[in-house]
Length: 121
Image (cartoon, rainbow, N blue to C red; front, side):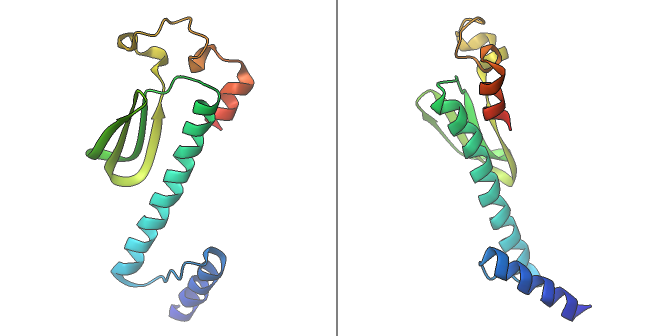
């Protein structure tokens, strides 16, 4: 069984090229780090798809749980959270406190279907 795990680990190392093993606490930290990078890239893609189309974005977060770091970037509340197992991009579409009229053409909900697909897929 152990040799089978090493074979799988070698395959992962070859594919990812990061030298990730499958044993011990280090491998758990490595897996979490890789997942955090994947989540960050994934959420950045959603954010950039909206930003480049000038669709309003109100929040951008990497991780869930308690906030470790928070800052504003061009009217977007950005945060890094304690649990790096996900993230989200928030849109002010249903936020009545945003001050953006509900018929604003740059709200995600008011954009053509193709624009929305580019952001959400």
